[in-house]
Length: 104
Image 1 (cartoon, rainbow, N blue to C red):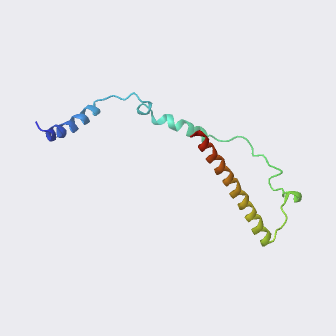
Image 2: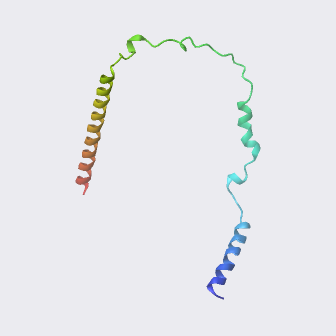
Image 3: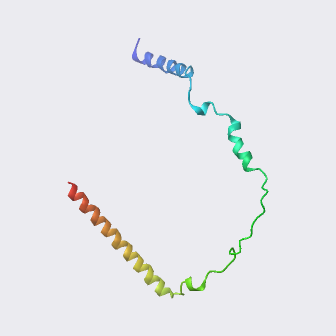
């Protein structure tokens, strides 16, 4: 028997063996009604009355509101934030590079 014939016969035999196997996994024993029970509980009628929230439509306090900035001030603040972020990233990279060179 040649190698090619052996391989051609091995594939159907392997599939036949897997078809005869047994499964001990819990997913094969799961039933559909176990999934529907929590869904039915969620659809149960609600008997509690809704409660009004007195602060739901309250305006924000005026002392916490940010002052109106000009477009130029907004751009400057964004640039400052970007510069701070870049500096923090550079510090983190330098710190990481220092730790790597110490370990080698």
